[in-house]
Image (cartoon, rainbow, N blue to C red; front, side):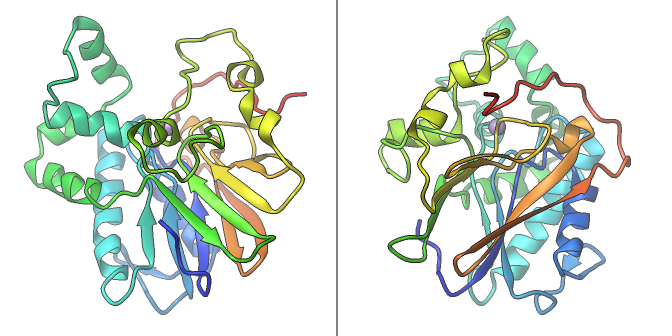
Length: 273
Ligand SMILES: [Mn+2]
């Protein structure tokens, strides 16, 4: 969906239950938060989450994250849309588990994955109120957003990186590609630039940017017009954002706040050449 070009945006990478970092990042960017509610007048920016706001953190933090996003989504969008959320592969998989999607065969491997990678499922199965909030939010998620400022400046936003032929398209295959790229956990030992070579191969020296998350990195990774802003908050690193204001693009981050135990991860660096 095209988003208005007369607004400013803060685009936030994969939250994965890092509610303390999400609040800190919003505050760092001028928002005031009182009792979990964002003061709509404290900033003129609209908020965009790039997806994967659930899973990996502990249940308490994931619950707080869903509650915060749910409350503020409907609070900020009362008069006009000021809060947008993209669908990440984690929202999609959790949705498929909790709605008992018939195309999801619950083999022993899938049940193991549910416990290991999609720990929000168990949380929602035991909390109907939270499950209903997640389902309502899920129905609001976008697959892609585009900020078309001018002939020389635009920004496409998706959860995962994808080939340009799929970017901002609305067929089923394109949607799938914008939500999830090739799995690193199923291709251990393969360099990320070899696993998804199209990102650097299709990169151009222009200002038609593609900003995505999904590939947890040690820092913001930028090569020409391709930018990854998933800086591994839940792995104890940082939560990052891109700030869009007219034809200006800036970035900032907050460090992991140590309010929960980080999970572990081996970084597989993007644009490592
Ligand atoms: Mn992801």
